[in-house]
Length: 261
Ligand code: DGL
Image (cartoon, rainbow, N blue to C red):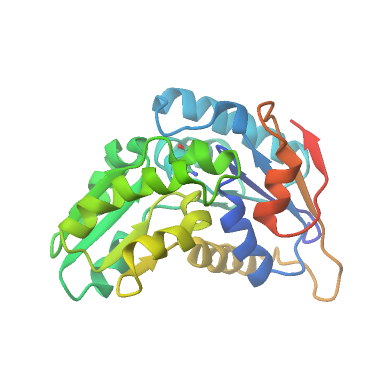
């Protein structure tokens, strides 16, 4: 079982930002990644639709032999992680916007959160704010259209910059000193965000914490792969709109072989 792969999925290519942290923290693990890009963005879909997709993708990854699942998507975690945990008996790691670390880090007392509209509207996000956001002012922005740019591999085009400037301005006006990247696609435009907001503002991404949590869960269940083995990574996508191999290669940072989902 410990040689079995870890299954990771997202609405699209965003979860590759998490996959990169997983590869760093767990270099001996075989990794499977599914990008459900044909159905991206999830951010404007109903929770029911997202749950259906999540079950389909989890079934697929488990059929490939996954020993654990990572829902590398804030939107899908909010909509579907409970359903997945009820349904499958294996470690399932989800993720949520880093409200708690941001509330701990802010000095100005104003925190900005960039996420999908689906995440911001979810009951899970309301509960997060209730638990950890009481002591600070929170400015949220649902970033319509940004995931689509990143799905096309447009990390620094004029369109992407204009969109981001529009979403970041209310945060700057609100005098945030900390910004949470509450969607796994957004770390890929971090350099552009830094250009726009300057270097006085702290950006928080949860990818590394998710990778460490995965490592902890695997260790607890004696599921870690042995050291010293060459680990593999396999990608599946159902993207028909763009050259998926090119985009995934760009985001993963290495040659990839893509299989059709
Ligand atoms: N990457 C996803 C997230 O973390 C979802 C983006 C989308 O499909 O809207 O929320």
